[in-house]
Every structure is written in C-alpha cells, then in structure tokens.
Length: 247
Image 1 (spheres, rainbow, N blue to C red):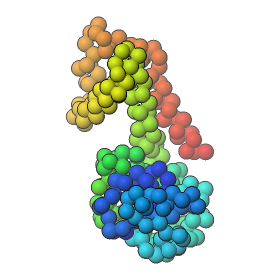
Image 2 (image 1 turned 120 degrees about the vertical axis):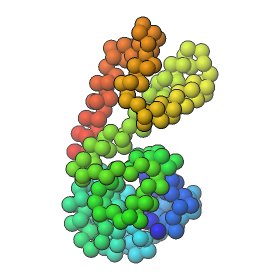
Image 3 (image 1 turned 90 degrees about the horizontal axis):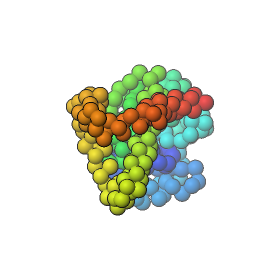
C-alpha cells in the first residue's frame, strides 16, 4: 500500500515513523514549511510538490491539515481513491461531501504512541480490510460511531501529554528528594509501562487498593492528591479539550 500524507506535522510524522518499513511507499506534501522533505528523508519516503500528484499516486490519502483547510485541499485531491481524515471536529458527513468520488472515506484519531507501534486509533467510516490491517500495525484500533470520535480524542488523544506531565512531576519530586534526575525519570517511566500492562488485567480501583495499604505511604499520597483535586483536574482537562474542539 502507498500512503500519501497531505500535511507533515507531528501526527503525520508519528504515523509515518510507526509504518517505517511496513508500506510499499510513503508520500508527503506540506504548505511550504519544508517538513515534507525532512520527513521523507527520515523515513525513506518521498516529498511530492503537488497535492494533486499525491492523490493520483497514493492508494490512500491521509488528511493531516488544519480543519479550516479542508475545502481548499479537497479541490486538489479530487482524484483520491480513498481518504482517511485526521481532522478533529470534522464529521464523516462533511468529509463525504468534500470527497464525493472517493470509494472510501473514513476518520481515524490516533495518539502519539503510534510512533512506536503502541498507539490507540479510534476509527469510523468505510475502511477496507487492507486499510484496517495497515492501521493495526500502529497499535490498537477501536471502531466507534462518528459522533463519539471527539470524546474519544479528548480521552486518549490528549492523555499522552497528561501522562508526560505526571512523569515530569513525579520524577521532579524524586529528584528533590535526593535521587539522580535521570534515575528518577527511569523509575517513573518503567513503573508507568508496567502499570499500564497491569491495568489491562485489573480494575483501576483494585490496583489502587492493592498498592495503598491502610495508613501507609501510598494512602497518604492519594489523600494529598485528593486534597489537591487531582481527579477533578483530569476531568476538567477532558472538558476543556472538548470545548476547544467545538470551537
């Protein structure tokens, strides 16, 4: 499969890195930033000068531009056979109107760990078995109704940044307590990786209860987080993301 990225920003780069060596070809365009050529050189793809050329050569066109550019870009991609959109707050209905001749039109909202093949990709629309299998090389694919994609993005698309903030905070506290900074980060990151695997098998409340013995140090830490409003802060982050998506 040949995949063409219209737009070469962070998410396009993450997907392209995750697919490195897995595709027949990868094409990139940009709006003049030079990022397409840089990314093509990095992953062994090709920078293409015109969106129209990319549309004729790619088996699937991945839209990785700002939603406000959809109408203008669609005019240049009328030859696209299959279109996969990364555009937030842009419905399937809108995409189908923009690409009436495409045989496949779908949406996918990935998160940054697709770069290492461990991402989550929430998808909706008409996706062929081949395209679905290609997406699965990047991580865990979840099919959702189109109306739920924005909520899913606020939860899984944004959360790597929240996890990174938590790692920074915990490692920083460890450093202040006397640990080497790099060691503190290693301890937190490896604990996060292991806890993620544990949470595949056990309920979050069960994990919390298993770590926090009565009157122990973890219980004291959880109480401090509760006083600081940690749970409310995460909920507020999701709400803020959804409000921003809605414009």
